[in-house]
Length: 86
Image 1 (cartoon, one colour):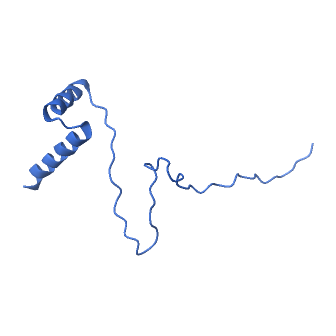
Image 2: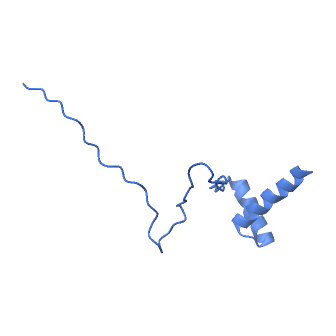
Image 3: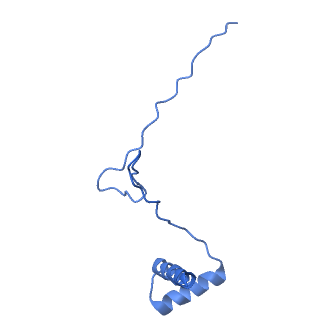
């Protein structure tokens, strides 16, 4: 019985690169690094699962206002911000 010590060879880690031009780049974001690079916090994107009553209310309000769901939710957030500003 012989014993050998081998060093595990790990695959070289790939550095992520953006998709080629013309591809979907919606989930790719370049971030500046280092001092002197101003960077605003990322924007919030949310996927929400509503219960039946909430879904029914949103659907009725969407039909009443003619707004798409995303625009309707933005409107509701803006209204809540306005109420909290006073």
